[in-house]
Image (cartoon, rainbow, N blue to C red):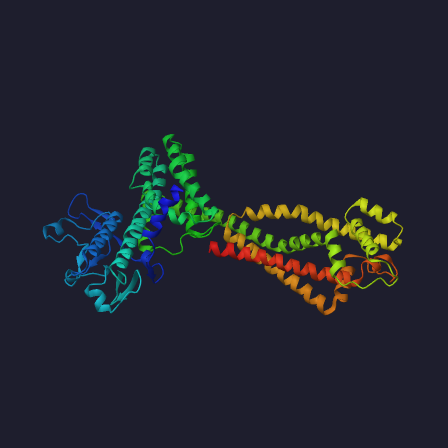
Length: 529
């Protein structure tokens, strides 16, 4: 209960605004890489620096301006420097980050984040907002990310989302990702102490802590198989791998690193589990991991072993799951029909047919109770050896009738054995999918096949039941073994109307039961989607 109360406020405060177009907040080029501290011995290249200006209106509400400052703060958490050198200091031209709309007119820029609606940029674009919105537009080859709403409160909501969620998350994600790549390099070089510090540093792999905290409300809604993968990754990175580094066990550390990489690949690419990341990252920002790997001499390791062999393993797991879904879907109709048939071979069903089936009276005057009793005797004969012996000893049936009932008993034993063994096995394989989407898809596909089969049987029965009955018996029995004289006891207690009723009733019951499974499949598939 306490955990639910903790997550609830975040779910409300950090509610996502309208994003236009989709993923605009994720794909905006916030960061670039450049040279810093030029003119000093410590000059560096390929350093993360802001690629945007954060703009607010000169007449904007102070609370909105404060949120613009917060956006600039989280951008600074992601960037490694503002991007200046000795010359910029001499000329007092250290690059700006947070500027007003009036200051913007005197600056050269290519990407801006405009916070609020009371500013010249929004007015020039002629835009209005009806809801909390983050909208990306392009004008004159420049990209503008607008953060607004219908009023101050909605604008603040949008700005908080961009700052507290999106930029905060990206800062943690890229620090974690790049540190993870560097970690492999330190392990390969035997730098275990450095690797361990990198894991435990808030600027290293432990930066993922902010992402885990931010994703808490969302993770609670993930399917169990995704949670399993995430738990495995966290156990590797923050328990097993640090222990291997403390023990200076290079082979084990590399193996654990690869396992962790596979879990990340599963989540990002949707291998074996539903895909968590639904967009392709900005290539200019993302590909720095390759340069980090190359700086450790890991180009071949990174590209061939990580980006090739691990996906192959994951893809193999995915193919197994797909085959399992197909296999389960194909067997579903058989098991459902077998279940309905088994329910039909009960005394209750025989009594139901006799009571409400409008069966024709016996031509030779046999009474209702006697006829029903003999019908139940025939039922028992196909369900057990004792019943068959009782059937034979009754003296009511010819040898040909007894032989046919023995054939029926043999067929039913195969059907029921398949149901009793196949049903539990099907359920075990079904729940082993551990993915609501795949479980739902299995039920939807299986139920659709069953629906086609059942509708076909019902329509065929209504149009020409005699032909269906004959085709069924000729397929499973000798064509001459099941045809009897009108006075034979089997035809007297089981007239054609009995089997016509049974077929339609079983078909309708199977259709209703199948519809329930179909609805359940849709609910599972939809909830996972």
